Structure formats: structure tokens, C-alpha cells
Image (cartoon, rainbow, N blue to C red; front, side, top):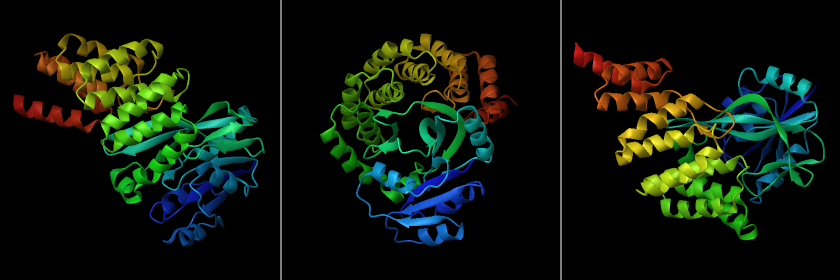
Length: 354
């Protein structure tokens, strides 16, 4: 079984070494350069990749499909220059192909952020056959023929560093993506997924009014069964929270939480909103529910909302209402899972009591 790793790059000399070094040596690696002015091509050559040039036309799917046309492997795995494959990549994909030889595969992208990790699923692995193509100007998706491809989970966890504040600003991603989103939505105004992406982009730049507008438009399209939809609901909840529209956010989440009972981000955000509004009586219920659900790979979720972050907030809650022993238990639980804020709070409380 031969796998081709495909990658589109432009001015990624700082990110490429980490990404290329993570690719198993058994794989073919294809780099499509779209006009780099830095040392990206030179760096790629050092790793023995096959390098091709492409004139950028503001269409990610066309670029991905062009890159894939050079792949000689039986399967194709797409990664970005600011991503890193795990050490178990070779074994996991080998096992996946043995179990699902004709299926596309989703991977979990772990976005490394300033305040933690947020993960989401994407289809990145598929058979190298002509019926499989990317569609979409930006945030493109894999199609099989005329329909989005059905997929199984590969179990592969890919680290993504492109959303860290330093890299995001350096690459000016917000301004680069905005015109592509707007252009796409002019042509396809009922694309709920792209409404979500545009709303997320506005949110990331602090434009909460614009974010709310786009997310509500996406909500009205009502693709309740789509993977992006519950994540969009939570994003709208945070957007309303940032604007002080707490009651609207609570009503929204209470409407959709029963529809997605395995999504910990919803009760977690309800817990945060209860803390904001001083509804002491429901804080405990919401955060305990988040912990009961636990962490999930089914949806795009913020790491910790089903474990250490919810536990930390319960620690705060119990400390505030005077049940310090319970608070300490939850701080310890959170700290044992590696949450530094909980460890710091424990240290302060120990020093205070000694």
C-alpha cells in the first residue's frame, strides 16, 4: 500500500521543517508551491519531496485537486504546512485501510491556541480515484461524485499551529480569507457551512455584531444534522455572551442542547453564562453535565470542557459558596489532568491555610 501526502504551500519556510519531518519516510510527499518568496521550495527540497508550481487563483479546491493529480499512491493524505502528523500515523492509516479499503477517512485536527486546544474533524484521507475531488473556494470538502463523501474515522490526530496568535497575524489569514468567503456567499447564499466560517472569522477579529449576523443566517438554513451545525450554535452562544446578551444565549443553548446530548460544549457554556448572570442554582448542574458527557471527538470541541475546565469551574463554584473541601476535590481533579490554573489555585489555598 502506497500513500501520497499532498501539501499546498506559500511562504511557509518557518512551518515546513516540523511538518515535513513528521511524514513517515515510507510515504510519497508532494508539495505544490503557489508563489513563495521565501525559502519554502529550498526547505522542501531538503526533505526529498516532489515539488510543483501553481499559479494561485483564490480557489483552494482547484489547487488541492491539481496537487493530487501528481500523486502516485493508492491513497492520498492532505496536510497543511502548519500541521504535524503524529508518530503513530503510519500504523493508524495502515489499520484503517485494512478495515475500510474503499472509504474516505476523517482526521481530528487539534488546533493549538493561546488558551488551549480546540479540535475538529475533517476528511483528509481518501482513495486516489477520479471520483474523489475537493469542492469549495475555501474550507473545501471532499466529494465523491456530486455528493459530500461519506467517511469513517481514521483515529489520526493532527496538530495544527496556524491559529496561534503570532502565526495568524503573520499570515494575515483574516484578511486573506474574508474576500473568498464573501465571494463564495454571493454565489451560494444558502451555504450554511460558509456562513458559519464567516461568522467564526468575524468573531476571531472581535467583530461580534457581524459574527452574530452571519451565524444567525447559518442557523436559519437549519442543517441540523450537519457536523458544523452544533458547533455554530455554540459559536453563536459565545458571540451573544461577548455582547452581553446572556438571556438570548441561554435560550439558544437550551433549545439545542437536547438535540446534541453528547456535546459537552453546550452545558459548559450554559455554566459560564450562569456564572455571568449570577444564577448560582444551576452552575453546578451544567458543569457536572459537561463532565458526565466527557471529552468528545464527534464534534469540534474545546479541549477540557468535558473534563479539566469544567472541573476547575466547579472548584471555583464550591469555593465561592463556602464548600471548600468539595472545591479542593475538583481543583485536584483538574490539576491532575494538567490544568495549570487549577494547580495554581491549589497552591494559593495551601499557602493560605498553612
